[in-house]
Image (cartoon, rainbow, N blue to C red; front, side, top):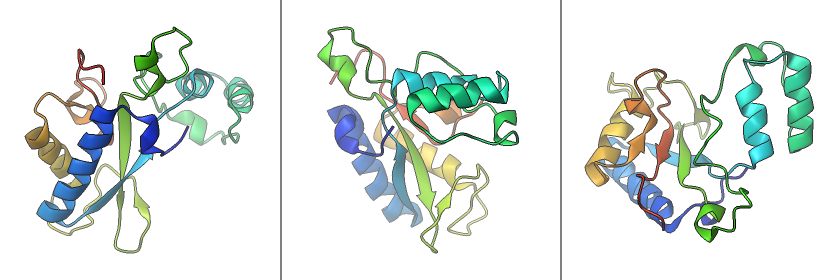
Length: 167
């Protein structure tokens, strides 16, 4: 798992850089990549969170090389699919799958701290920032896959490459 944009496809790198510039210019907010790529092991541990007993989740996290979580953290699901566009170690001999086709963003507040709440309003305009960012993203690429468009469970920080684009 990393925030390294070099582990994203050129499409997603270019999209994020444009989104960062437009968000700063239009609504005065700084955003960063908080997650670009994931190993399949780490993603499996994330998928188990909120679905499996804490002991199993933490065993999977140990295998993935990440810190254990608390019982309170294990009450919350953090991903809704086993087939994530963040996964880059598929071992399928397809070099297009060695780069992440998804990026999760985070808002950085004036104090320099990450603002993860869906209701964050860093610029104090009485509008949820992640919703505003999603709208800006759609002006850049109407076909971008935005987690805010998901019907069942919203994932406002999540952006993924449209299907059919491989670079």
